[in-house]
Image (cartoon, rainbow, N blue to C red; front, side, top):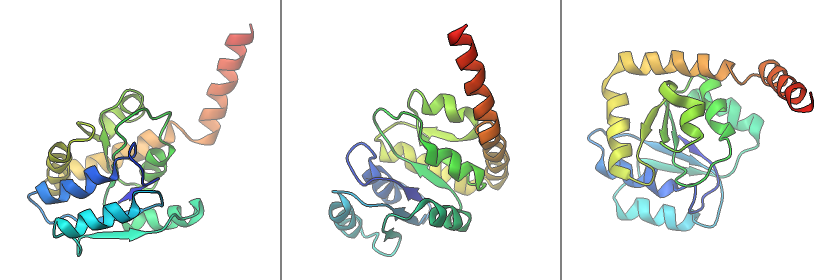
Length: 171
Protein backbone atom coordinates (compact mmCIF):
# COMPACT_ATOMS: atom_id res chain seq x y z
CA UNK A 1 0.00 0.00 0.00
CA UNK A 2 0.93 3.62 -0.52
CA UNK A 3 -0.58 6.53 1.38
CA UNK A 4 0.08 10.19 0.79
CA UNK A 5 -0.49 13.22 -1.39
CA UNK A 6 -0.73 12.37 -5.06
CA UNK A 7 1.79 14.91 -6.37
CA UNK A 8 5.15 14.95 -8.15
CA UNK A 9 7.32 14.81 -5.03
CA UNK A 10 5.46 11.86 -3.53
CA UNK A 11 6.12 10.06 -6.84
CA UNK A 12 3.29 7.55 -6.59
CA UNK A 13 3.89 6.92 -10.30
CA UNK A 14 7.06 5.05 -9.27
CA UNK A 15 4.98 2.48 -7.37
CA UNK A 16 2.52 2.04 -10.22
CA UNK A 17 5.23 1.65 -12.85
CA UNK A 18 7.16 -0.74 -10.57
CA UNK A 19 4.29 -3.21 -10.84
CA UNK A 20 4.86 -3.34 -14.60
CA UNK A 21 8.55 -4.22 -14.06
CA UNK A 22 8.03 -6.69 -11.21
CA UNK A 23 8.39 -10.43 -11.74
CA UNK A 24 5.55 -11.11 -9.30
CA UNK A 25 1.91 -10.00 -9.65
CA UNK A 26 1.95 -7.50 -6.76
CA UNK A 27 -1.15 -5.43 -6.06
CA UNK A 28 -1.13 -1.80 -4.93
CA UNK A 29 -3.62 0.17 -2.88
CA UNK A 30 -3.13 3.92 -3.30
CA UNK A 31 -4.71 5.98 -0.53
CA UNK A 32 -4.71 9.74 -0.90
CA UNK A 33 -5.74 12.73 -2.92
CA UNK A 34 -3.94 15.24 -5.04
CA UNK A 35 -3.56 16.82 -8.44
CA UNK A 36 -2.13 13.69 -10.10
CA UNK A 37 -4.91 11.26 -9.23
CA UNK A 38 -6.44 11.11 -12.72
CA UNK A 39 -3.01 10.83 -14.34
CA UNK A 40 -2.07 7.95 -12.02
CA UNK A 41 -5.32 6.14 -12.72
CA UNK A 42 -4.77 6.56 -16.46
CA UNK A 43 -1.17 5.33 -16.21
CA UNK A 44 -2.30 2.20 -14.38
CA UNK A 45 -4.77 1.52 -17.20
CA UNK A 46 -2.11 2.16 -19.89
CA UNK A 47 0.19 -0.36 -18.22
CA UNK A 48 -2.55 -3.01 -18.05
CA UNK A 49 -2.68 -2.79 -14.26
CA UNK A 50 -6.32 -1.81 -13.79
CA UNK A 51 -7.01 -4.98 -11.78
CA UNK A 52 -3.84 -4.64 -9.67
CA UNK A 53 -3.98 -0.96 -8.64
CA UNK A 54 -6.83 0.25 -6.46
CA UNK A 55 -7.36 3.91 -5.56
CA UNK A 56 -9.01 5.10 -2.34
CA UNK A 57 -9.56 8.70 -1.28
CA UNK A 58 -7.68 10.39 1.53
CA UNK A 59 -8.53 8.79 4.87
CA UNK A 60 -8.54 10.40 8.30
CA UNK A 61 -5.63 9.11 10.40
CA UNK A 62 -7.78 6.83 12.60
CA UNK A 63 -9.29 5.16 9.53
CA UNK A 64 -5.88 4.76 7.91
CA UNK A 65 -4.57 3.12 11.09
CA UNK A 66 -7.57 0.78 11.11
CA UNK A 67 -6.81 -0.30 7.53
CA UNK A 68 -3.00 -0.62 7.74
CA UNK A 69 -3.02 -4.18 9.15
CA UNK A 70 -4.93 -5.34 6.06
CA UNK A 71 -1.85 -4.89 3.87
CA UNK A 72 1.37 -6.89 3.41
CA UNK A 73 3.82 -4.01 3.00
CA UNK A 74 4.11 -0.24 2.74
CA UNK A 75 5.69 1.54 -0.22
CA UNK A 76 7.24 4.97 0.37
CA UNK A 77 7.94 6.65 -2.95
CA UNK A 78 8.89 10.24 -2.13
CA UNK A 79 11.78 11.24 -4.37
CA UNK A 80 12.71 14.65 -2.94
CA UNK A 81 13.10 16.25 0.44
CA UNK A 82 11.12 14.61 3.23
CA UNK A 83 11.09 16.19 6.68
CA UNK A 84 10.28 13.00 8.57
CA UNK A 85 7.74 10.71 6.92
CA UNK A 86 5.42 10.00 9.85
CA UNK A 87 3.44 7.52 7.74
CA UNK A 88 6.55 5.30 7.67
CA UNK A 89 6.51 4.91 11.44
CA UNK A 90 2.72 4.49 11.45
CA UNK A 91 3.02 1.65 8.93
CA UNK A 92 5.83 0.03 10.91
CA UNK A 93 3.88 0.34 14.16
CA UNK A 94 1.20 -1.76 12.46
CA UNK A 95 3.76 -4.41 11.55
CA UNK A 96 4.19 -3.56 7.89
CA UNK A 97 7.56 -4.10 6.25
CA UNK A 98 8.53 -0.96 4.32
CA UNK A 99 10.22 -0.35 0.98
CA UNK A 100 11.48 3.21 0.86
CA UNK A 101 13.18 5.76 -1.35
CA UNK A 102 16.81 5.86 -0.23
CA UNK A 103 16.78 9.52 0.82
CA UNK A 104 18.79 11.25 3.55
CA UNK A 105 16.63 11.48 6.64
CA UNK A 106 14.45 8.55 5.62
CA UNK A 107 17.53 6.32 5.64
CA UNK A 108 18.30 7.49 9.20
CA UNK A 109 14.72 6.88 10.32
CA UNK A 110 14.46 3.37 8.84
CA UNK A 111 17.92 2.02 8.01
CA UNK A 112 17.90 -1.77 8.05
CA UNK A 113 14.30 -1.79 9.29
CA UNK A 114 13.21 -1.36 5.67
CA UNK A 115 14.27 -2.14 2.10
CA UNK A 116 15.74 0.85 0.28
CA UNK A 117 15.53 1.46 -3.46
CA UNK A 118 16.71 4.24 -5.77
CA UNK A 119 14.28 7.20 -5.56
CA UNK A 120 12.12 7.61 -8.66
CA UNK A 121 13.34 4.34 -10.21
CA UNK A 122 10.47 1.87 -10.79
CA UNK A 123 12.88 -0.95 -11.74
CA UNK A 124 14.73 -0.57 -8.45
CA UNK A 125 11.43 -0.58 -6.54
CA UNK A 126 10.23 -3.62 -8.49
CA UNK A 127 13.39 -5.50 -7.48
CA UNK A 128 12.85 -4.54 -3.82
CA UNK A 129 9.21 -5.67 -3.93
CA UNK A 130 10.11 -8.93 -5.64
CA UNK A 131 12.82 -9.61 -3.04
CA UNK A 132 10.34 -9.02 -0.26
CA UNK A 133 7.72 -11.17 -2.00
CA UNK A 134 10.05 -14.11 -2.59
CA UNK A 135 11.72 -14.28 0.81
CA UNK A 136 9.23 -14.97 3.60
CA UNK A 137 12.02 -15.14 6.20
CA UNK A 138 13.25 -11.69 5.18
CA UNK A 139 9.68 -10.37 5.30
CA UNK A 140 9.22 -11.74 8.83
CA UNK A 141 12.55 -10.20 9.89
CA UNK A 142 11.48 -6.87 8.38
CA UNK A 143 8.17 -7.03 10.25
CA UNK A 144 10.03 -7.61 13.52
CA UNK A 145 12.50 -4.82 12.70
CA UNK A 146 9.60 -2.51 11.78
CA UNK A 147 7.88 -3.01 15.13
CA UNK A 148 11.18 -2.52 16.97
CA UNK A 149 12.00 0.63 14.98
CA UNK A 150 8.54 2.13 15.54
CA UNK A 151 9.06 1.86 19.31
CA UNK A 152 11.95 4.35 18.97
CA UNK A 153 9.36 6.97 18.03
CA UNK A 154 6.58 6.33 20.54
CA UNK A 155 5.26 9.44 22.29
CA UNK A 156 7.04 8.77 25.62
CA UNK A 157 10.41 8.22 23.96
CA UNK A 158 10.00 11.19 21.65
CA UNK A 159 8.90 13.42 24.54
CA UNK A 160 11.90 12.38 26.63
CA UNK A 161 14.29 13.03 23.73
CA UNK A 162 12.72 16.43 23.07
CA UNK A 163 13.05 17.35 26.76
CA UNK A 164 16.72 16.27 26.80
CA UNK A 165 17.44 18.26 23.64
CA UNK A 166 15.68 21.33 25.06
CA UNK A 167 17.74 21.10 28.26
CA UNK A 168 21.00 20.77 26.29
CA UNK A 169 20.17 23.73 24.06
CA UNK A 170 19.05 26.00 26.90
CA UNK A 171 21.89 25.08 29.28
